Amino acid sequence: MEERKDAAYFKKLAEQLMFRLTDEEAEWIKKEFDTLMSQLHLLDAIDTEDTEEMVYPFEDETYYMREDTVTNVITQEEALANVKSKIEGHFALPKVVMKDD
Image 1 (cartoon, rainbow, N blue to C red):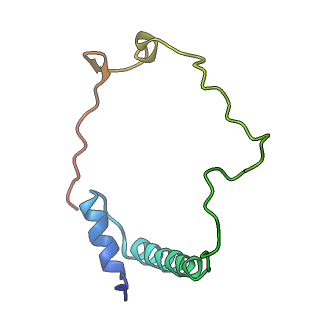
Image 2 (image 1 turned 30 degrees about the horizontal axis):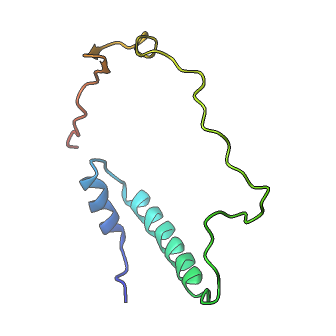
């Protein structure tokens, strides 16, 4: 059986991802996660034993894929025209540092 996640788990996970959650936010995420998990359990309960796998959602012969065509291409110079700072043709941004409370 899977372990139930509590609000503290989500607060710790958020800190590992370099952002902080309030107690209320962590509790809201926990409730949303519990709802999602119960919905996934409902989907798991559906018997799909005799269901044929599909490559595309439409098996009709009229279904087609559009051609992959390149349109509206801009140059690197155009893309970087309004950039405040660039290095060797790339956007240059300051390092993001998480401050302690």
